[in-house]
Length: 341
Image (cartoon, rainbow, N blue to C red; front, side):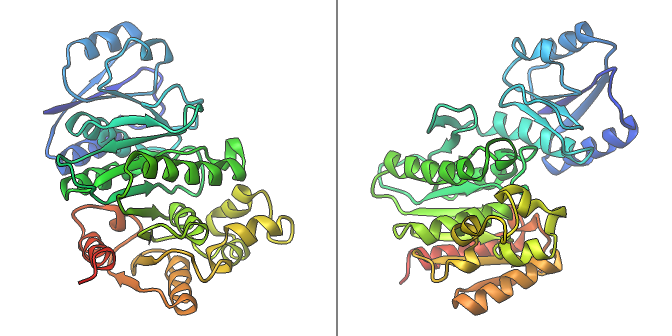
């Protein structure tokens, strides 16, 4: 399998840098890479028509999106108006790696798109293993500092890994507060989990939330006593202290709509540190090579809650990398907690 990378004429970036990053990413995915530069929409359309595998086009061309094959992912380095579920944007040069991963993953391991609401961002991608018995359902809640430039593709590799382990994976998208407000975000996570439960009655529900998604997972675990487990992967789980430290350049106050003094009810309901004890069991996972504030939050949360903290070498993204030792340890501990002997 080869990935086609199409570099359009209006691209503002060093093409050698993009090509090098694309080559490294394709190598990690064990696929080939073909790079073409085009002078306009006609050449881009011609390049796509002659390629049967995954493709990434940057910058995105809205005029071509509607007629393009489903195997194409469109990527803008800068923030752009989203033009569909296969349009990623706003992550800079590094985001090209995520676009290539998205193109390969969605072609290699297709998912069933399940809507749980009427808004275009209210959906989950489901992968279900063969077999009639209720398998555990892993609901994946992505992070990204609650900002809309980050999306469910962040968790695709874990979703595929869970399905390979015999789980049903439910990779959840939700409305982010920068465009829709904090109440919409928390309501969507609850509604998405409820939809997974309705779709798989009797199956244990396990949440896997990364970074900001870890906060959303533990917030729901404080409200929902029927979860089998909530796993926080490098979670931002002390919102009040995180805001005092201006974590993510003020991302917490931006997401919740203000500081703890300005919107105390939002912090009282949403801050996992303020919601102890949680209503459902939980597991904390943290890479020791991550940002020191996140290491601190998770150590203090474990001390305050009595929950198990699995801290091992790894950075912020090793905790969601299927081949990492810390993810293997996470799944071993998760299996132990949901299926005690």
